[in-house]
Length: 331
Length: 291
Image 1 (cartoon, one colour):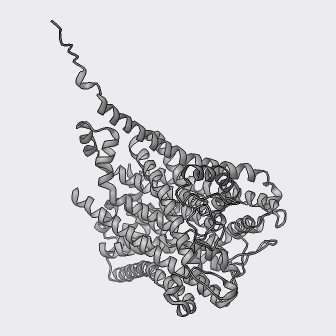
Image 2 (image 1 turned 90 degrees about the vertical axis):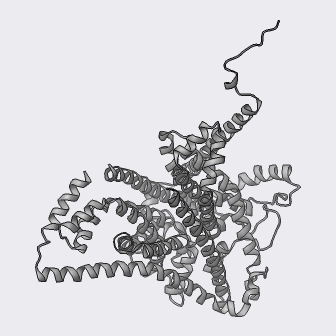
Image 3 (image 1 turned 135 degrees about the vertical axis):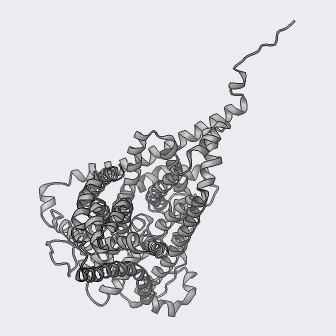
């Protein structure tokens, strides 16, 4: 059908293709113009990244020149005394994101396996979009739900149970007075990253050649052994890249984390205590920041976040692209 | 003389080891199915909560009046900010996609792709900080600044989606246009782009759905404490739904919570409706183009 529409359009376009010197000249100019506009737009997207980095570093420059790299390790954050340090926030960011990844990645990869290998087409076409819909829920609503619904549940059921059964591990200390904790934040982050990792890994698993899988089955492998021996090894780097993308998302999430993490300033071994992350601290304090140094320090947090985010994204791209090459070569 | 019992099916019945392997395989299958159901259940719980709590706040008054009875200024504000952002992001995104798929060499295309991916991976709060430094610092907050930030967030989404449909446009069309002596710009604007229009709209709607719920940049760029009046001028700080939900959620005020649930319901209905519609349209146009 589209071919018919396309040919009608072609016919109309071809009517203008009469060769005349003037026409050719006009065409040449317009060709160049269209190319120029498109190239400019593409260039702009690259420039925007550089300008963003410049602007954020610029905003942070007072704090950078005052605190230097020691900012990364300083754990006190007291705006009233002009003392700022990112240590505890870095800790909170890393811990909450990695816990989210530790819970989320296995779930997401399982979902990817279910959607690509187990589910019949009908079920796949319903559950797949539903899982992706999870990524469409705005973080502010997820965070709001997190405070009012998830946090009380975690506080009353999950935390006591984890403390009782796994309390010998310092991660699972005794529950605090409210459910606002690093753990709750990790669970919210888990919800946000699962759909990302799941949909990428589903696509990866779908691309594994069917005959290789059938070959393994014919040799007597069970379904799990096919997954373990064929599907996962051939997609491993792609799955790692997907997890890194999810991690990048978790590291940078500001709003939902701010709402549930409790804005604590101390470094605690227990996940059930309050904490804070880089992004969350910016979202929380930037609107109320009055002194120049406070703002600059928040910008400095942004610089750290930018560097971490770029590193995780670039690594993901790099691994993902290498994977592409290998698959191309195998074909 | 005892006869050795010969069972022809013996090699086919699982012995202990195989039974264990099968059981393990079965367990993993159940685990994967369970994970998928769990994710759907979480979606169900979140949406159910928003609907059940938000429905009681919802009324005509809630949708059409300002604070304290309703959220009309925030609805209109979000609409305005997102519309201005779309007006910036959509043309740029389409141009970038055209560049990558019609003009660029492989090398340049993959560099441009990388830039888009990096832009897509940037935390939205960083984009908020950037636009704050660019437009708001030493001046006042404005809805327009919010639009710029949302446009940066939407740009890679529109570009990526458009690029995908441009890839689906059959190469015959391009070759036929060349063969008929149609100039490049005319082929792109009157043949290729119109064939991809459906996909471009789909990508834009998905980007709008994403931008409508984006909160982090707006907190820095356009946070109004109480949206009493409708503001139609984006050069002022414009009230909007995400910031409103965020502010109400930070106060421990049951009445505010009720309003926040209502606002969440409005926002989530719009987003889910938009992305469902876009998906349906996408699936249809894909079928049409590939068949």
